[in-house]
Length: 443
Image (tube, rainbow, N blue to C red; front, side, top):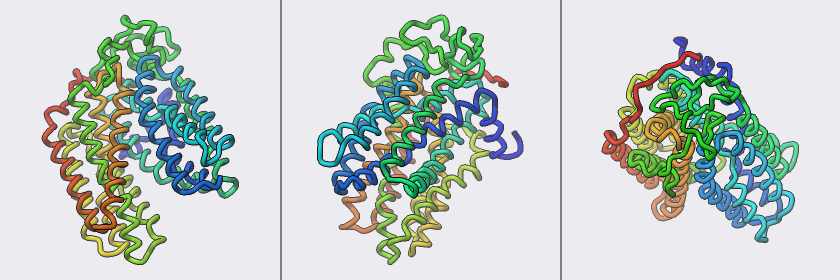
């Protein structure tokens, strides 16, 4: 594991009984990063207007926002197999109904969109909570969260390309259905893959071979407390405490509430830039050049993770998190110096270097702050905060673009990123990990 970050990734992702869950989770998450685009293309292909397509995509996102915390809570209580199996079947079925049995203009298509979003398999939350529970050393866990952040960048870039390739040989509706089914199969694989012995929350009678060893960082073995409500027999669910049934769930923890607020605020600049980048490129006479500029944004983040990621685990997460947010804010400010589409592409490529590292540090903080019985829900709230912040930024960018122009939106994005960094520095003491001394394993 001393041969650099790629070697650390390879060692982790090829480990017996870790590799299965990790790679099935990649397949299960393919629909997450292209479904809104696929829905828009499908509705337009069916003869719907852009307004109708936008409504369907928005309602899908609304369903996801409403349903994902509830499903994640069920995942924490009931465990991996039952929840993932149910959503692996329900999600492709709901999308198939939307594509093949509804049409724009009626009530059925918006209803199917809400349902599909609500039953989206919680693959992100499941895998991230598994990384917190698997018997790994602290350095390996940091590598896992960095992999998660890097994977997000890869899927954001690659998943739409996969959609485009499928549409070359079929319709948008067929491509959407295919990706949904493939994602469902990946979810089934994640639901039933075996985990290593010693995975936190694994019942002694489980076929993964757990022997009731102590849990991972900050968690003790609760196998004696298992109940019919939450057996944890597949290594995800842990017994629910009475207070975990509170409507706010893990958000009752002030540190996690602060962290989700910081992540929501830090995502607003992403939404602002999403609107400002094509407007800037268009105003400089290159309306077809927005795609390559966007690509530089994602590639810069991925390369930043590979270049800087190896040294991150040497700094405590509550210390490096605000520093990375400050670097992210300064990187966003580079867009103010751009005078051409090429200059903007370079600014985004350089300035985006900390983005994946911010995400990885956030995951590390969530795993240390959240109660072990509600990890999946905690990761879900953190992801939702980012989605909502991004959406707010896009809405604000749309309102500001005409009266102020893209450069002013770049300035607003920079100011918002600086505010997020300031809030992170102010909350640094609150974000200190509450975990007990680490118990290390060699798997």
